[in-house]
Amino acid sequence: MTKAVGFFLLFLVVGSQGGLLHAQPRFEERVLAEGLKGGYQVVAVDVNGDKQTDLIALATGMNELLWFENPGWEKRVLLAHLDRPINLAASDVDGDGIPEIVLAAGWSNVAARSTGTVWLLKNQGDPRKPWKATEIDRLPTSHRIRAANIDGPAFVNAPLIAADAVAPDYRGAAPLVYYKPPDWKRRVISEANQGVVHGLEVFDWDGDGEDDVLTASFEGIHWFKRSPQESWVRQRIAGGDPAPWPKSGASDVAVGRAGGERFLAAIEPWHGHQVVIYRLAGGTWQRNVIDDSHADLHALRVADLDGDGNDEVVAAVRGGARRVLLYRVSNGRWERHILDDGGMAAADCAIADFDRDGRPDIACIGAATANLKLYRNLGERRPRRP
Image (cartoon, rainbow, N blue to C red; front, side, top):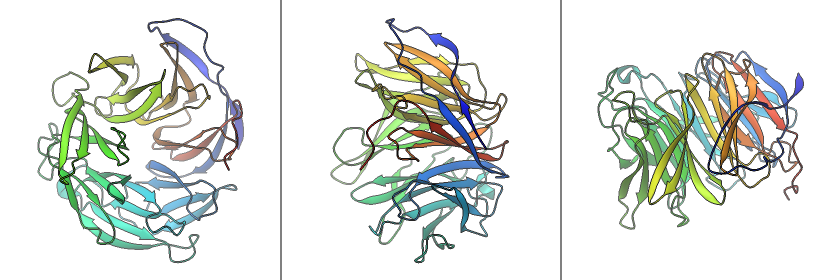
């Protein structure tokens, strides 16, 4: 089922300047799947090497890992007999055109109940048939996995909490680690983060050609940089929500550009109600709450969806109103739009050009709604990719 959806403008956050707003894009909504119990993560990646971007759908309440093949979006089983999957990342490590996948499973946010099993998944010649899974680690509450370039291909793992942390304060040092071929052994980045570490972003922060690691936690947003001596340096970027622990800090973080300058988008605090933009001014990242009207915000992505050179922010209300929201900036003004109102309790979204028309599209997976949707961008066309 498909339907055309436009943006419904809710309000405008006035910035430093006025001016005309760029034309708004339109999206066509298509339901790709339903019945995905506990939908939690959607990953955009070319699974079968045909140069088209597919979708991997992870649902915590299912024992199968599914993928949907572009362009017909046929459902296929990537791996069966899973125990409480929670997160994955995909990257072509060996250069054969088919990605390797690192998957975290055995999930519980109670460390004593979490095996935190980390699996390496490889295809066995036909990506449409079930893949082979090899256990490479066990680290309780393994929760966020991201692919990275750390002196070559790598995968970063950010457990949610320390092994001895308990609710409601979750105090304790949460590990941050990564894995590299060919041995896939655990390598420690840091054990300096305290409390809940919910957000993980991999990004070349200093432009040296190697990825750095950003985390969002009860302590705020931090940057981890690998030194020439192979040790890691941790630096705080921002403190996040200034409320007392455990209502402090940040839940998710993403890096974007607007007006030719870098910005940070964040959800604050943990599973919080605030969408926040940080801009660098006078050597300090200044905090600007652009929306504080929702509870249980979860998904967070940035991309230039309308071709104006400025990144938009996509955030989702997983509980309550069940909305997918989009924030646009023009001449210093942020405005909020509704992309999906009530039909998607998104735990995660992914942005990619799925139909290869030069316009980024959006895919989201729902938790309470247990569905997978594609929002095809119908805006102004851009040059087609080669």
